[in-house]
Image 1 (cartoon, each protein chain N blue to C red):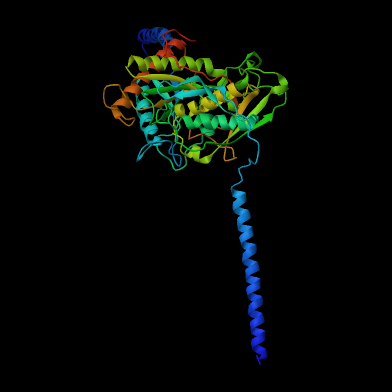
Image 2 (image 1 turned 180 degrees about the horizontal axis):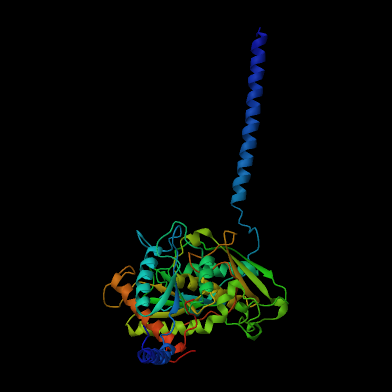
Length: 239
Length: 222
């Protein structure tokens, strides 16, 4: 039996046209997901600060990291975290920095909590930006001052997230400090320290409050979306 | 006739009385000398005239995360190490007052401050490139040896720990301009952090740490 030539030719032509029509569509495929590095500080034998009688800092950073991870995933970010439980032996700060530096994230967020102060403290490294003699990328990057080259981007990231938190009506303080692993990161990096919410006229909201944490997480996700948009194209992409 | 044994006993008792009298007399003389020495008002060493001088303390405020220079009059020793230690003890004791805006627990905080001369041709790391330069022959490294009790009782948090360090660094920089960098020890040993956060292993540039954090701005910074 001979196959009909016309229907086959018509089908081939249709397939060709369909594939040609698909070309522009594939060129407009969604941008690769932006990678965010989250480090819930402390863990294991290191409880961090004692926020109340039986609430260590490591518990709050872990619960907040979980909320932030959900908010970021919903906003289209890929998230890498250093822990999603409380292991008996948590990573050291150097190991956390190694994980971050090898994953080339767009932004690194180190999560902390404290019993003092008010609102959210956004901290950037207080290392000095590199001078011209260190601008040559062929130089080895000193581990202790690895963040130095990213200070301008980190300050801009802190400002963007600070604005987002202010828009969410949360008090923000932008400060600088020397902190590990913040100083060892090669990505734009900030530390976010959650303090209790102590309004002038009202009750204090503890850092363990779920609504408070959710509010912060949502504002940070919004801020990072703005940050990604301002960057134009993502720097770090999923590999 | 007095028996011989009675004569021996008599003279023995007489000798004993004589010796006891001499012993008591000697004891009374020594006690008198001791009491006379206690009443001597002659000064052991001539007093030195200590005048007060104006020093700048960099005071931290937890509410707005600021460091503000404040001038106070203090009597300080002239020896630089002792001077630095006295100054830091005064600074940190001010934080234990009820009115302190950066409350810390009371008690001695600083064991020693060592001042070491640094080689003039040592290149700065990138982190210290912004430090203020002084004459090459005057460069000194200050090593602040904190007490373990101070570190153990320090509040834990990035901001509160950073403010304590910035307060110490700014105050040392203002009082001892020849100090260009500062390191910290705890009970004579290197220590990771002050209270779980602020890095105590790095060398800090001695700079003016006055800071008043600005709120986030709409102006793009990239």
